[in-house]
Image (tube, rainbow, N blue to C red):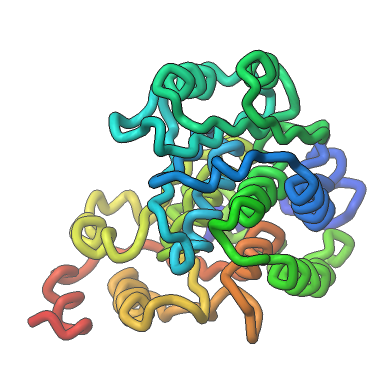
Length: 352
């Protein structure tokens, strides 16, 4: 960690310096997460959506960046409840299976995202049931012209800073349409935990978990690893590092990374000087994933870290809000060079 230690750290030592370095007030937007989620839930609950929208065989959320991540998180959080497949589409057009029996949720903060407009038009042509989530723009205009339901919200920020709306609106409409149970209690429990967690990472403290992590990661390239809903959060971590820190970053998911990424750990040796792996873990990880994370950490030549999250969580939604507000809970592991990763991994997980 010599790279980080040799740099100027005064920028995070006081509230004043942090604000100077954060002209877009991203920190303030992160603190708004509880308000965003509550507002989104209330908006979705009051929305008017025809009962016919519940009669579908698949759900597709079409969006990009911050407008798409809410769909990813919702699908992961509800994976054990949804009775129809749900996928996120980040591209032009739509998959071939989308048709009249599909619910297509077009999510665009601005309402003018090129790829999402393309998906909207394709969904319209195929006769899919289209629902728009947006602040306005062309998508709102087109949805009204086609008499599609629109769920609108108002929040001035970069799209990536509106995670609470991106997630809360999707969860809200899925609940309203009967695809998920009422999540009101889960949401309040998650936000209650978040309020406690925010005290631990307040920017006014001279040092805390988040600031320590910032120092360890300064000047390095973070790779985020996660499983299940934390795999989605790994994508989120990568995107936030790219957009907020203007920094290289990447992500991968368990167990897939154990079938390929581990082979690449030793090379090139210079990677050790530049990369840091972040293991995003929760106490709700699949037991086999827990073993794989432990072995992966060993292969990276460091001990595994503590799980991310809160005790007694009702659903993994708590982990989502926790990781968004407090990256200091992630375990940093510096990449080493070393032995035969695949052989060691297979032996440790009982796959000899």
